[in-house]
Amino acid sequence: MLDKIKALKQEFDKKLKQTENFEQLKTLENGYIWKKWELAIILKWVKDLSIEEKKEVWKFANDIKKELENNIEERKIYLEKKLYKEIEEEEAIDPTLFFPSENTGHMHPLSTTSKILEDIFISMGFKIEDGPHIEKEEYNFDKLNIPDNHPARDVWDTFWISDEINKHKKSWEKVLLRTHTSPVQVRSMLQYDLPLKIIVPGRVFRYEQEDARHTSNFYQLEWLVVWEWVTFWDLQWTLQTVMEKLLGSDVKLRFRPSIFPFTEPSAEIDVSCQICKQKDPSCRMCSWTGWVELLWAWMVHPKVLEDCDIDPEKYSGFAFWMWIDRIASQRFKISSGRLLYQSKLKLNKQF
Ligand SMILES: [Zn+2]
Image: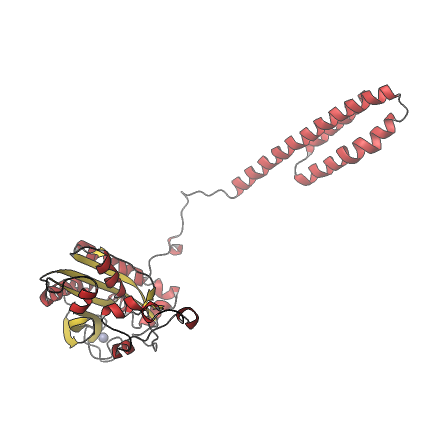
């Protein structure tokens, strides 16, 4: 009897070695442990034996059964390892293989322009600052000398965050999508000690009618210097130096007087069109004028300094902001700023 069981075990061992996958293993397990082994065969064999013999056979059979279960577990582990090895070999990556260069990506013209600008300013000792896109009304307007109901607020076509969020807030605590990077000036003046020398590159949002020069979100770069005795002349010199480094030594700047509530005095600055070099009467980028409105520059209003706990009798500041989009268009000679936001690989691959 015991020999018969041993023979059955040997038969099982042989079949186990032949299993090559989990399905075959499962079939074997079902056949031996649950049906053939315990019920169909053993019960039939032991029915005519004495109680003592039955005990002996059952004990032996149970030991063998445990052995079978262990064997199946071991085989499972073996098959798992084999499977993972096969997957590993199939999906192996060889990092030394040649990868066709036409499939590699590169930076978008806007990112490239930001990086160039940041490098220029870092080389001149400026620090890069950042701020939130969703800004408090206080920082976007009030602390920049543009209080509630001031007509200058109409200049910035503002995206307000929904009424549901704003309706319980006090006026200056209401939130909006920042219309310019200037709130970061306020945050920095409140946070850092003087002297202050920062640039703020970042995305801003306006409810604009879109055309070749206007989009509803765009990138600005703003700078701010607050120190003793800084003047409009320092502003002009810094600006000329930056633009020459950025667009080439033949670039010309044109200053026009302007006014903003947070500035005193201020200027709008046009740059000679780098796309047509002031020679193409059909150029869309400069609207046939030869000049592109690219920058605003100003001396910081004393009231703004005062609101940020800085003594305007002792310190003065100058600042400017520029459209990174328009700089990118000028530098890469892209005729419409809107193209920069259309995710067109065809355009991006050219730069
Ligand atoms: Zn032009």
